[in-house]
Length: 260
Image (cartoon, rainbow, N blue to C red):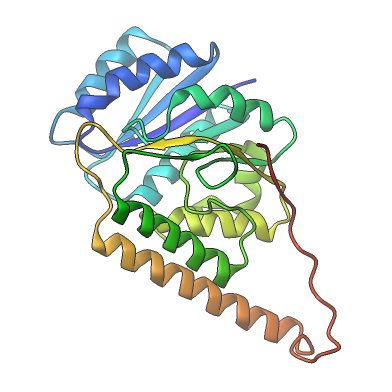
């Protein structure tokens, strides 16, 4: 099975070499696509050296810091152009540990999308501040409630997609950028009725480098959820004008499962 892991980077020189070593070791046929946004610390040059020595490592260089959402799009395009059947997305800072990838791939034989989840039995966080945990929980609750998302960890970036899912949801047309891209992607997957599974992971706060989550990212995520919520309400009232009546038939719930 042709599998590629997409790793967006910006100033991850302290992490990237060890991450590449562990990714290549965790799954014999796994290939890695690093999408680097012209990191000032020279992350891209470090990856270039790996590309020259190892055929399983690839790099997409971009002109500057263009956002997480567009980095995923660039990685998806590269992976699909190279006939990847499974596409994994993950962070470069070891918050998403490569040791969970074999379990994700195993789950993907039955599920269309697999999420590495902090919020199912067996999952959790390590070394995260109270503020970080509260922010994550609040973002999940906000998105789940307004968008009726079935996954428990709907803001997680550690995911495995089947290639046919990415073709079907037209990932290039996802409007959101930054971390809110993850929410809109999951909403698009759920709207198509794909089976989403979650496996437990331990999310660990980064040891090196600085977090990319800013107050602007938080506000963008809130805006994305409100935009999608408004769009969904508009679609329901246009397509099913009787749904607001008491005798309206409820829409079928999308399918989700937790692999604990």
